[in-house]
Length: 615
Image (cartoon, rainbow, N blue to C red; front, side, top):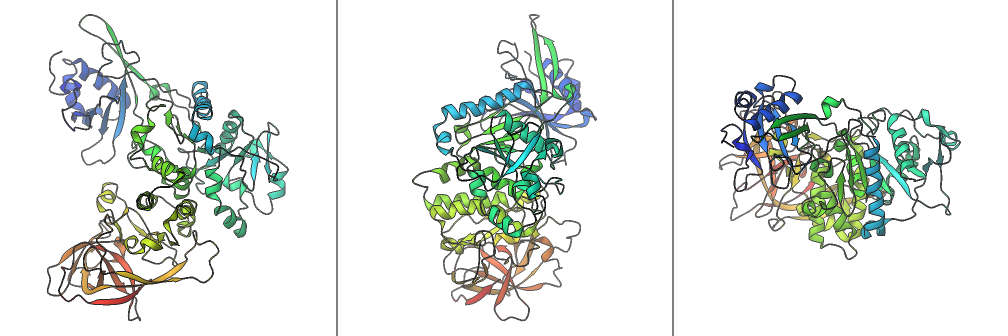
């Protein structure tokens, strides 16, 4: 085969290239197609799936030895969102199978018999072969469940007795502001008498069908199994989320549905599912390269929308409650717009075949759920340092999720916090832990990640949440990387609330008293906030010292020009990062957090130690 300067014969660059081969514009592939067979295949595939001006797109080609070949494209150089298409053969004897790794077609209907058979095979194999998974199965039943097996056309809300035993299936779904079927104090007895199958929205109907396919009798759906207009019942049941999802036979995740009407299953046009490109080599042998949408799996397994193809629909991955449900569940069956994904304590699989029984160990070291499953399920437990690192990583992912009500920020993570508390992280303080309270205060904005995805940070509308807790914000944040840096700063007192019924789900401390090095300064920046709301960079200056940049937690909270700066203070130890604070009006030593600063001001021989109250 002659060398092609456009596609480089689809040979990956040597070294740590991440599978990158080459890139360019659509017109370059089109121009090379008449003389290069590989370019002609790429161009035909691009034309089939990029229906709008394929010649003007920017593209890159990627292929790693163990992975499939894919071409990613975006409409302009400034566009941050890529779309991927997957090129593959079906037979290892195909002349081009060494470039286009053999794979399987997607099915146009995700509830087809093939996919449902695979689903039941995953569950059956897990039940029979996975010792760890079998050890997690039990007969636990929640306070209420839906009995889906009593009658074919009716479902009954049921309150199990002590004699009743599981298993039960749980549903994780987006409410989307519209849930037509709710259990209230008024409808409780009516639902116990039976609900017509036709009365359920599509997502609930599909969940009932899947539960029956798996030969399970009981299904748990939050909107039906919790009395929605009872504050007492909601609090009681919300505190049991770790038990509900942690003890489920499996959890159904309605990943692609924006509300209860979306359903679990999707139908696609055949032209959107696959396209076949037929060519002949120099010996006249036929080669068929198939093209279909490229399916990303890692974001789904990480329960994160970041990294997904721009055309992917995955609203469930953006919700805080659903993130907790995913981590807590020992087995998850995710229903995406193209296929089903399976995760258990032993492995993961998918309908398209890119993940199978052998994939788990490859991803376990870096995958958040794999780490959670491993470290929280170990009989002897993980070292506290490792548990705390896992907790901070969970918080970083959690803060990127959305909430309908800001007051749910702690409740939506309480089930996970309960497990960490039981493993020895100590007393829980509004999302922080008492034994590590000093380093826990130094969470910070992750500006590069936020900039890449245009994430605008926000302050919680829950006025009871103190500013020193990460639960007072949402957006792209992370923990400071080193505990050893925090010298010369200590928390003297935590003002716990006297009566707290759910300390993991409620604000349990309004203020803390901290002693450290306190330095007065002036800060400015953000005058262009209206045009650039995701820019959190600000300037600060201590008298007699050169100005320095820092990151404000919420961009809208400091927007002023250099000629009209605001008075702030920096609280830190004798080294390490500092908290940028603003004094509460009318107080002498009470402050609210504004942000975090690194390596400023420089250390002095006579630091000004002070005791302040943070609220």
